[in-house]
Length: 237
Picture 1 (tube, rainbow, N blue to C red):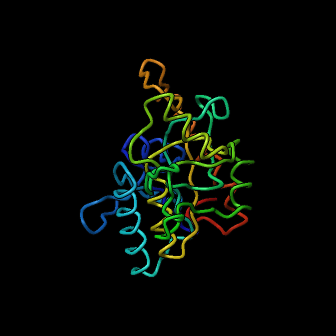
Picture 2: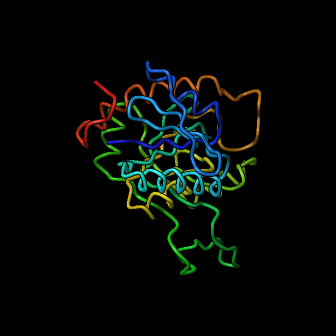
Picture 3: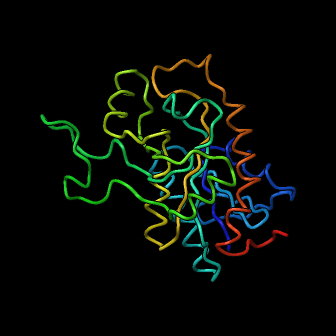
């Protein structure tokens, strides 16, 4: 099984490829994006936000399908904010649901999701058995991961999101975009987030980006063991 891993930025991509002993090989995609290929994992830094993530994922999935080598799994991966105390700094979170938390409309009665408006779905549910396997192999916390287009920067906004999504453990900006593209191709999806900061008021001095990137590397060292029951990974032993 070939796995596509989509990150936002190069630092996250490099943290993923650092999990494997092989030197990544570069492969160009249409439009100029570059895959870093190693040990059955193709890693793409697609850009920040759900739109960039969806576009990059769709491009990679389409190119693979046209080449007759479709991916068996797409993974949205990177660092993100954690909802404390459920997901402390340095923790790894695997999504039970990938939720579009700010896609919808405000109303006098409160926020209405895109599903409630009748215009689509506001969440994707990765395969339960796969989530459990990844949680066990990587020591990840299972829960909801919220996709937002604007990172939370206040206690009030954090409280609002927690009230609407009581199972939320992490917040990031790309997971729902990856999931939408994967669903259009009939490809399974996962989201993995290493917590670099607490969701709420922005306090850069308290961020632990290095620790989160190290946790992401450790997660991908453990990930192949969780994927073996679902199919062999090309290039692994």
